[in-house]
Image (tube, rainbow, N blue to C red; front, side, top):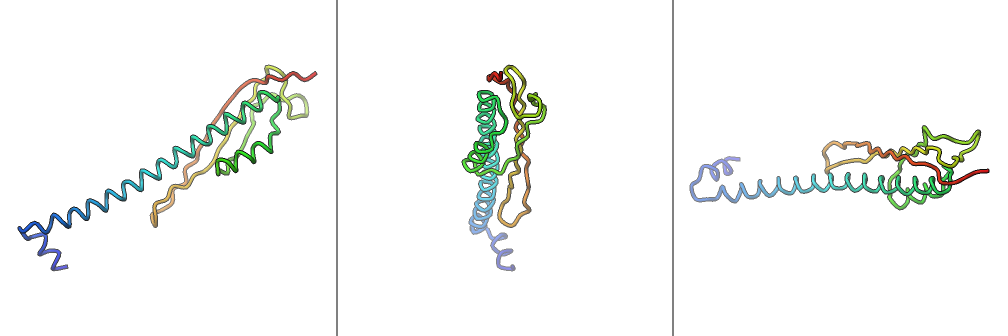
Amino acid sequence: MKKIGNILKSNRGDASFLSVLVAAFWLIVALLFLLQIAAVFKAHSDLSNAADKLMRSAELSGRTDLNAQIESLREDTELNFFVSWEGTEYLSGTQRVQLNSDIKLHLSASHEMKLYNFPVYEITLNVRRSGTSEFYYK
């Protein structure tokens, strides 16, 4: 410790080497943090694309029981998201939606943001979509 103190007090320029090391360390930490933030934006983008695909399928088919497609999207995006169709106007007792009736979709997923041994922050991502059915049931 005494040696570091002598280096910092020295006029020979040895302290600049130490300050470069400290600056490089903090630059690396900042870059790792930015990569974690970029991962959150990518996860939100993937969730948004999944919501668009699910909503379009629901609009075209007039149904909300798209379990096979939901599982396929979960595998593709590698996100374990929750699907809610609350507010959708169904035909009585079915999961079918009549022509020009509202379909409302809500996807939510949690994404962990971590940086080595620092605390883990869990961020909840939410995406909402709405549309109208394009399928007519007789």
